[in-house]
Amino acid sequence: MKTCSHCKHRKETSGFWRNRSTKDGYEYFCKVCSKKANRKYRASHFEKVYAKKKEWTQKNAQKHRDYHKKWRVTHPERLKIGEIARKAVLSAVRSGRLKRKPCRECGRVAQAHHPDYSRPLSVVWLCPSHHQKEHANV
Image (cartoon, rainbow, N blue to C red; front, side, top):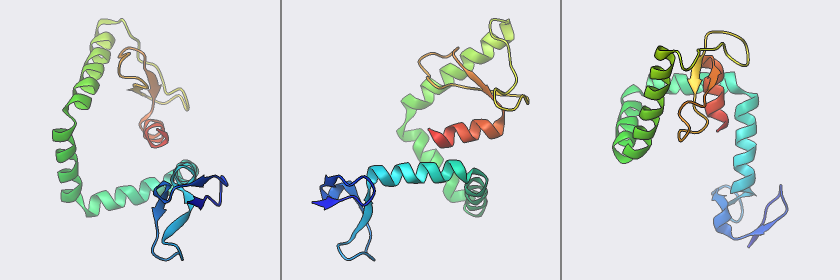
């Protein structure tokens, strides 16, 4: 058992990330608090995090492609759901049942974002940069 330095809850050591540099071999914050802190940091330093991610992707292009290729093979059901939702929006826009709107954040030209793929025509219109931020927060 170990106490999280942030939330003060006592948890099993499996609730903490490993860290060889600490005395007991585990991080001071539990996994839940650590994830919250990381999410908050990524949201408040989006440009810096995005630039670093983009730089890594460019340097490791083949590794990045291989990872995504493997993910597509191991998660066909998620690909199928997303593909169906994208095609439904495209069809609805073409037929006039759904109107393209500007980004809800800045008013620029927008893309359709699906908060819930089970409701394919329920979309939020976001420009590419805000769309990326939305996915970073999820």
